[in-house]
Length: 261
Length: 88
Image 1: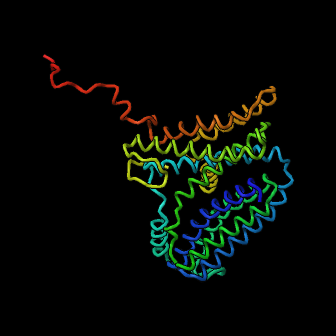
Image 2: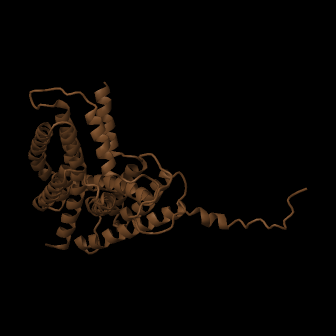
Image 3: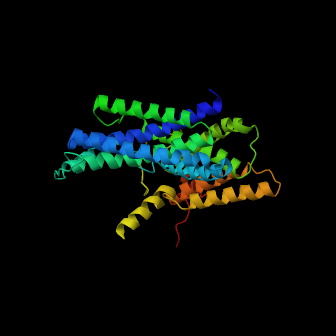
């Protein structure tokens, strides 16, 4: 696999793993608090809808001229990447609460237990069905977006789909093996890495789409990714010092004043 | 009407996110890259520069203040001497 192919696989795998962790948490809450059969039917229904979306959008995306696709996708990746990085840096520097999968699971569980049971034609428990359906569909849409845009831009949708499939199956298998939220997955660190990857690919593809010629062509990514990473680690350290916390690694959280968002 | 509003809010949150300055800056960065390229100027450096400016600006908006450590700024003011007259 080439260096660009490896970067593509890692970016899609990590991004999809993060989304899969969140979807698994919701399905586990729906199954535990309500009814496993309804949660399973909801998950299957969402996967079918996602399959239809891929079947419709996949060929359509491949017909868009590559230059136009790279500008639009580069812009979207930059927007999403900077959103992820912004949150990841605020979390790593102690300005925002860490994403806590165990806490989210407990919240979903409490909410699901508080709802009254209602049968429907589709599932024995309507609430369990809709909770799982919405969770998988919304997180799955992001996976579909990542696979289609990364794959189409790199002219390798197959590799992007394999990376997404590996991540989803691995996370879902782990979640259902332990029947508990995957709180030990270093989700905040993964989001930091994914933000760096999305932003780097966004800079590269957006620039190419807008007409820029990168020195070294595809090899420029191997400079852009570490440069963005170093810049973000530096910003995290700077923000930590502004809270009086000290330190430099983006992993260790510190309780501090919080910001909205 | 509320469903339409919720639909709009979902897409606004999905694309614009927490800080509208970020997407606006990116659009300007891409337009600037396009303009430089068509003017015959090397343009690859503009988007990395946009990142270097945009991310600290957005972070400083989030924490409601500059990113420079407070300790650095505090050092500029010398501590009051115990022998300094405290006014009359």
